[in-house]
Image (cartoon, rainbow, N blue to C red; front, side, top):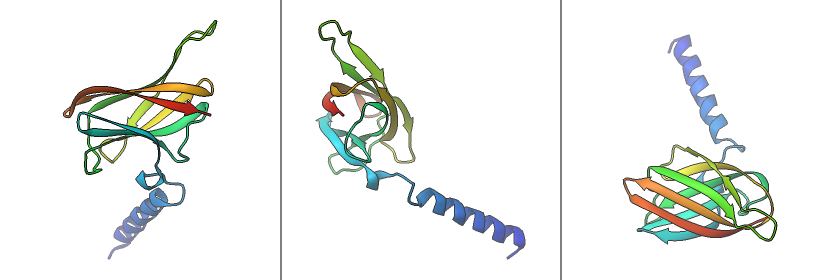
Length: 140
């Protein structure tokens, strides 16, 4: 094997090890916060701690079939809504979703304004149809 091939192989191995190391997050680290079913799909909101905290949060949005296999649903959205109370106006905090290498698994980044009970409004549209669900979640 030539030097270039050996260096390329070592770089590839180091990249894989870095991606799979202790800091890497994946389906094994997902702790379900809440789930529901719609249109033959199970839709789950998860995090690495199993809870949502106010301020900046990283969450996972999962779509699976009846057997638990991840399903690509196409475009997805996640917004946290709290209705107005008294003099406080309603709040809507939209998550920024990015796809992952696993179909049906989206990373969500959101800044939730305050602790309390929020409605997590999830929408999807694609090859599995169009749907919307709402999960009542507690933000700490």
